[in-house]
Amino acid sequence: MGLESRDYMRTDARPVREGVRHMDVARVAFLRRTYLHLAGAIVAFVVVESLLQKAPFIESLVQAMSGRFAWLLVIGLFMGVAYGADRLARSSAGPGMQYIGLGLYIAAQALIFAPLLYMATRSSSDGVLGTAALVTFGVCAALTGYVFISGINFSWLRGVVAVGGVAAILTIVCAAIFGFSLGVFFAGLMIMLAASVLLYQTSAAIHDWRTDQHVAAALGLFASVMMMFYYVVFFLMGRD
Image (cartoon, rainbow, N blue to C red; front, side, top):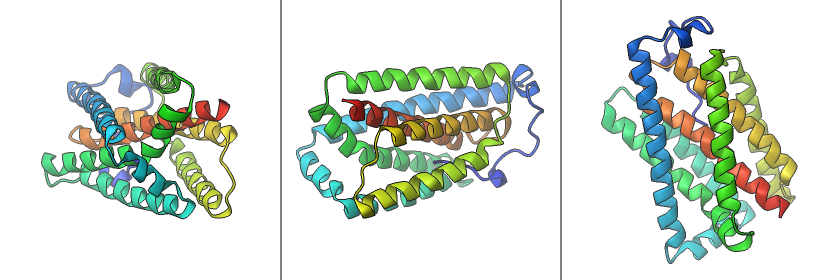
């Protein structure tokens, strides 16, 4: 999920609230770069996913990914790629390596989204994706605004996010092995987890990340936004 280690983050985080009200020029520039990269990552995801959904092999790809154990393999590969991409995005080897990490993560997200969006565009009522995009944007904008305005440091959510992520993965694995479906209740819980991740990542961007780590910070925010979008789509489809 793009959870960053404290080893890669600033150790001189300002007190709660002061960091927002009295941010220096370097921190403001860092946040501007971070959110520009987040916007670029979202646009890149839309382009890649659109091309993937129009590819002649998309139906075969979705069928290959839809089996219970095939989906477990896909999730395992995604987690491996996500971990590697996150490490590359934080790399001190230079911007090129960091952008490779962000690009890999965008591609991995496009692949993991492929079956869900394929079903959403072909099996659900019209407007599901548009509604999901509006809901995701609205919730993310509201949570981001709250963190910036309040100045609260949500670093304490790190443990909540870690435990919630492990519980979610175990639930998904059990669902694939034992064949039970994940309903709208699970989707609702995952939306709440995604909101917690976004609060944590936004707070980290304000208080913790070094000002030269905008690519890694953008990857973390992108992960939380994509997680929320995925489960908002899942939730809306489950209600149809």
